[in-house]
Every structure is written in structure tokens, then in C-alpha cells.
Image 1 (cartoon, rainbow, N blue to C red):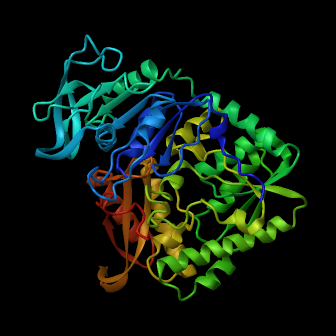
Image 2 (cartoon, one colour; image 1 turned 30 degrees about the vertical axis):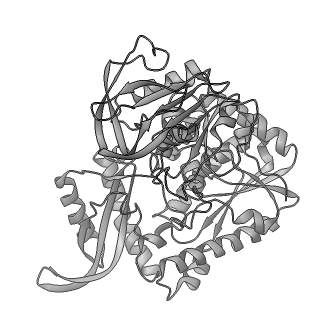
Length: 522
């Protein structure tokens, strides 16, 4: 197989975040990206790949205690011999322990807001914030004895070591925060991160959408040359932006395939296909509804449905791709949350989703892999899309799952159920647009439940299906809160769906957040 195209190698500078399993690790990455500094999350036990672009390392928090026998550890001294290192919570405690300090259970556990006090005169390069600043704590262990050569530079009312530094024991500085600067409740946390990255690591803050586009296009040109790329489009933001970047690099040598699996939203296949052609993309639409409906008949298990849809998509895509001549590369719209949720501190994570674009097709098709968005979060993808002039028709679309409406129909898939859900979903989505609510939520959709209940319409009793409306607010989909839509709007949607969609007589609204729930129901 040809080498996959990973854009991290083109960056002029980057920060590595070593993930020890913290729920906040991706927030560190997001905070750094928002400072126009490129960063990557790596499992802590994976060897560091050193090159001249690495400007610093951040050690994340962790659900482990540093004193547990199986607690993950790394050679911090070896890292600080090359670049500055910042330890956050567990990372700070690990740093202290590795250099001879003592970490123990704290008599006072700190969870939530605390006030950090520091001497700003001495640490302006790092802090440059209010003398008494609110920070977010989440730890039961604490540093009770500092290693030799380490200096305490901040405290809270509860603990003597809120932050420390060491400039003497390694060639590059080491800094530790027992709080979480990446969490919004640390009111000046982003300032502290910026100061570490800019003043101590020497980052230039020059990673912008324009710079990303330029570097990415040049990298694709160098990698692909005059060879051909085939890519499946979904109509979503990710695949559309990825396709346009590849198209900018290689022009007509990009061949796109848009498969209608019968599980798209109402009229989506026709409207999206038309939009793609207006963008100048070379796109072939394939109607495979009957094939998908046939194989999904009688299948209720959600994972089996996903696997059938994934297998059929690969088969249809392969069949169409084999009609093309001399294809060397496969393009995909994989984004960073897909990658993050597919690895963990100890290797492969528990499967959260089985419909990510991570892997799958390349192994079956023996092609090189082009994933221009692999290291971008969803909002970054949208910013890149705007930079290259993609229409808001695509950029403003809510995320839509790969298996489509199949995971929004709980139970068996039939053409009648799909048609019913498409109509209900269309009413809901258009209602959100008409009331100015669509752009205020991150994702919305309608779920057809395997529940029939008694209703009354006129003088007749009905026994029909229930749909659940779902709308969430989020930044990247890794966490989400339910959207507080107006009651009047929800009442209107319920009335419109029940009156206009035959087969539905009850509408409910999902007020679960992620976690513990997921955004999708299956």
C-alpha cells in the first residue's frame, strides 16, 4: 500500500499533547488551536516522533493516580532535554514524582472552582494574569513534597502547590499546573497556555486557515502528482471540504462518487448532487436504494445494520471505482474527533462509533490514502471551507451520520418507515430554519421509535408511531448539551408532524446530554 497522506508533516511548528486518558485532553487541543498554534494528541505510551517542528510537549490529566501500580508513565527528563514540557494535573504530579517528589492522597479533595494566588512579578512570562485567579481543579492526589530544584510559583487556599517550575535540572524548562487551564471555568487559563506556548516554547501563532490550505494543497500535489484519486461524497461538510482541497491540488484527476443508499434526508440526493456539479467537481451519482433496503429487511440490531450498510457501501463504491482506470489514491473526509475516539491511552479504545471514516476502504482497495482533514476539528473544517469559498449550503449543514436515517429508525428498516421519517424530519429541519433556530444548534434530527401508542384524530382512534426530536449544542460533537428550544416552537412542530405525516400520532423531545447519552440514538 502507498503511504497515507498525513498533513502533520508539513506544519512549521507543533505542540504534542500526550494523552493519559483525561476527559479534558481534547479541550487542551482545542484551546491551543484557537491560539493559532498547531497541535496533535498522541497516546502517552506511543513513542514521541521527534522532528524540528516539535516546539513543546503537554502532559494531560488522567483518571489514574500516579501511585497506582499500572499508572502510565513517560521519560519526562528525555523530553525536557529537547523541548519545554508542561504537566497538567496528572501530568504535573507525574513530573514531580519522576524527579523525586512525593504525591499522596490529599486531605482536602479539590473538585471545581478554586482561586490561585501567585507572584506575578516573578512569573509574568507565564502568568501575566490577576493576582488571584479562578481555576478549575479536579484531583484527589496532591504534591506534598517538591523535588530538588523545583520552585512553587502558585498556591490555592486549599493546597500549597497549584503550579511549579524547574529551570535547572533539564536543558529546557518544566512547568506543572495542578489545575486545568483548558477548562472554561479557569477564567484566565487560555492566557496561561498562550504564555507557556509563546514565551517559553517560542511558538509563532501563525497556523491559520489560509496557511493550512496552502500547505495542504502543496502537500497533495507533491504526494499525488499526476495520479488519480477517487473519493466518496456524503453531502456533509467534511467530505465536501476534503474534496475541494483535493480538487484544488489535482483538478480533474479527482473522481467523486455519491451513493444514494435510500437513507438520506428528503430530496437530499438530487439537491446535493446538483450542488456538487455547480462546484465543478467530477461527481457520479449512484442510486442503490433497492440493494440497501433488500439486505436490511428484517434486521433490527443496530450494529448489524451499521455493518450491512458499511459493507454494501464498500461494495457499491468498489464496483463504481473499478470502472475507472488507473486510480492510485482514495480520498476521505476523516476529521480529528474520528481519530481521537479511535485510540486511547492503552491502545484501541472501546468502540464508541463504528461508522467513522477511520480505516476500512484502503485495506480493501489497495490504494494510498489522502485525508486532508485528519487533524482538524469540525469548526476548523468549516473555517477552512470558508477560506476556499465553499457555499454555506454545505458549511452550515448539521452533521449527519454515515449510516444515515438507519440509525434514526430504531428497529427494522423498511422503505415505508424511511419515507415516514424523511417527511417528519423535513418538517422539523425546515421549521428550525424558518424560526431562525437552525444555526443556533449544532445538530438536529428526528428519530422514529419502535413504539406505537393510542391517539385520537377526529372521531377515530389511531395506533401509530412516535418520533423523538433531537437538537444539541456543541463545539465538536465530543460533548453536547440538549438545545433549549422554545416550547411554542416544539408545540408547532408536534402539531405539524402529526397532522402532515400519516403514521405518526405522538412527538417527544429528547433532553439528554452527551455524556451520558450519545447524540444519535443508535
